[in-house]
Image 1: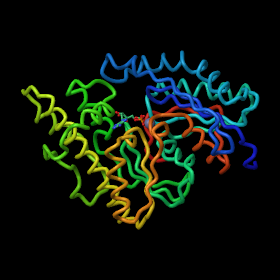
Image 2: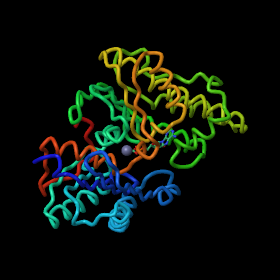
Image 3: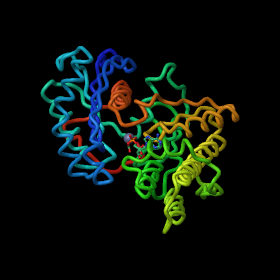
Amino acid sequence: MRDSSFRLVLGIESSCDETACAVLEDGRRLLASEVASQVDEHARFGGVVPEIASRQHLAALFPLLDRTLAKAGVSVGDLDAVAVTRAPGLIGALLVGVSAAKALAYALDLPLIGVNHLEGHLMAARLLEPPPEFPVLGLVVSGGHTALYLIERPGEARLLGNTRDDAAGEAFDKVAKLLNLGYPGGVAIQQTAENGDPRAIAFPRPMLDSRQLDFSFSGLKTAVRQHVSGRTLAPGELADLCASFQEAAVDTLVAKSLQALRRTGLRRWLIAGGVAANRRLREKAQAAAKRNGATLYQLPLALCSDNAAMIAAAGWQRLVDGARDGLTLNAQASEDVF
Ligand code: KG4
Ligand code: ZN
């Protein structure tokens, strides 16, 4: 099938706590990208409650689809293919998107493609102007994952390193919870850190002396817990603590990426996922890329956090490469190689 067969691709995302739909034209032009966040539903529990997430996706998806199509100025009959997140994520949440995508593909007789959420985060970069050249080093930093990939070309990625315990975003969320800063914690930590001294507390930079490209963030979280245990923090101390924690997390992400660039000989570096929105990470990665003569690709904030534009972009590429899924497509909770 020629590329033009996939002029309008519908993307659907429901792997965690955002329901999202997008319509992408010709693989690069975003006609609409809508996100219905469930954050308020989960915030009072201090984290995502899987059963609530599934129910919310179910209620949100079809009204959101209508809104997305209206914004894009197209009707369901104009669509040429459906791309949906099939893994990894909360299984009940994923199933809502996968079932809806299968129903649409069946009813409209459209090609269907299941997309790995992490590949989606990375392939959001296809929407940049100019898009990245390949090969590129891809760092995915999200609430559930922290992983480094060597991406030879779209659709062909090799896992170089992964987190051994907590993901970077998870560490931000857990530290925020510990400090009563609310959920989700990444933005709250970033904001509190603005007035703090990043050198106030020397938190560990985990795995930095290891030759492996894996990450580990649970020790950093424990160090923060030990630091605050039994103490009441003054406002200035809280800012210093957040700034010092953020600095340790960011330094680790940047240093491991630089190790990976050196090890692979790559000169291009892409950072994706919710934590890629972090201002300090963006600044330090930019400075490190410049120092090391690497080209850094950073995404606009709306393409860092969960969205369906990235799923449509990754799905479009797979469809053009000839991949198809049948109505036996199923959701899968974990999958870090794609
Ligand atoms: O990619 P994402 O939206 O969802 C997952 O696939 O997990 O990432 C969400 C994660 C959360 O842990 C959130 O706290 C973190 O991204 N995050 C941030 C920032 N914005 C979102 N972490 C640090 N700084 C931020 N500005
Ligand atoms: Zn994500």
